[in-house]
Length: 132
Image 1 (tube, rainbow, N blue to C red):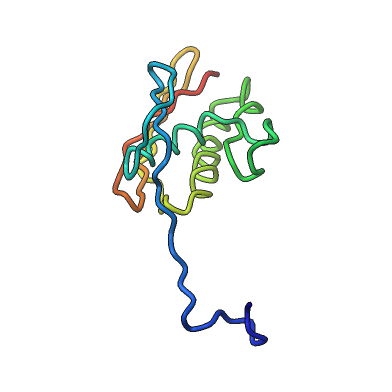
Image 2: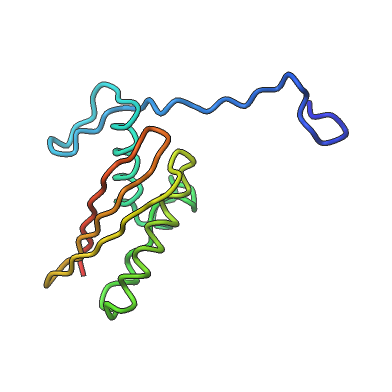
């Protein structure tokens, strides 16, 4: 019970949850075993960036990324907006402290985005291809 003054008792401790989760083998399309630490963070980032926000009722409205409305737009709009949306999507995860070094490579039918996710488990280089 929280005291009337609105503050938590002195002996109350907030503990950060482990990042241990099921291991998703993306190449073989199977789930088996467990993963933790940097591998779990890499997997969490992959899943966030692979889930269209607001499309699945099973996920919170804060989970995923909005990409659908970017198709067909001018690159001068898409590139900075893509960086903003990736940042917004990933910073919802409290284990991710910042994103750095965004680079974009535009080909005929895709944008390849590379950046580094600075997490509580260390820096993780990320690549994300987005169809255009």
